[in-house]
Length: 62
Image (tube, rainbow, N blue to C red; front, side):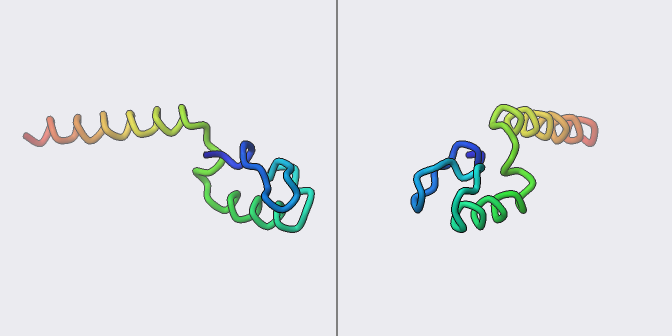
């Protein structure tokens, strides 16, 4: 899940707005992970490309 859809339990606002210290801390923590900001469809596309590359490599070595 991307952090732009998360709601803070402390202030009940979106975490990406960073209205309270809890929001700001969680936003910083989530931004450290480079995959956190990616769209789920982008992650699926990257996974598909990775699987295709591994299958191609396995086919070439067999």
